Amino acid sequence: MLEARLALEPEECHVTVSSAGTAAWDGTPASEGAYLVALERDLDLSTHRARMLTSHLVSEADLVLTMSEAHAHRVADLGGAEKVHTLHRFVSNDVEGGGVSDPYGGEVEVYRATADELEALIDGVATRLVREGTS
Image: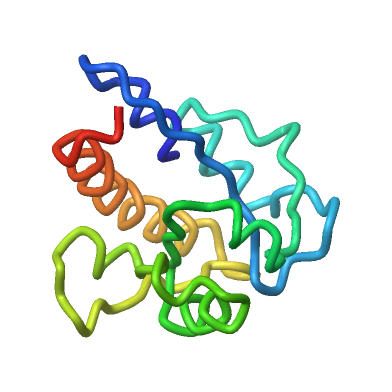
């Protein structure tokens, strides 16, 4: 979602976007709910495969954004304490930050609600990245 949103920016934004999970099984395709909701939003997850977050991935990243505080703590445990933020905290600079609920295993409506929340947050992330000159 972030990669697609950054592509809409009028200024070229040189950001590499990747994804990894704190409880992901390497090689697992997107869940059915995620796949269907992505299709509704013109995003194709047919080739998406999960991968586990590792200390190597964390060390290679300049910035790590997470859906929840629990995910942020895992990033910190892997050596990324100085580069991790929850999406809410990154967008609002709120120390408490809040979290995005994981829809995994829920009904498609739960996936839609999560996607709506993520779209709003990702818009804020893209705005901040462009404003701070990541290009």
